[in-house]
Image 1: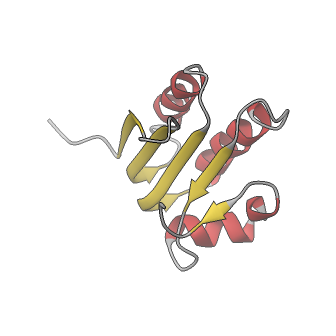
Image 2: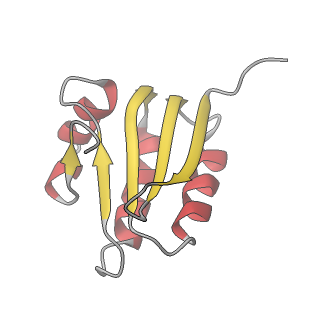
Length: 110
């Protein structure tokens, strides 16, 4: 049995925020499962930190998932922060797509 392309761990930070850590790859083959995980985490009703530091690959499907997540939080009812170093696969894609202009992106968890 092969390993899934992406591993998504959902937990709670000491400050009360939901932490969603993504490891591996997000592409067409697993986008629906990843989107479902983010949707479930969004329903917890807490501010959210999305940790993409261990993400190795992110294609247009992954960008679409992040855009949907950002739009879901755009009303200000919940804060969303993405963790992605500038010179990483996720950081590069976030910069190219200019998602860094619409959501806070930090390089490290505080």
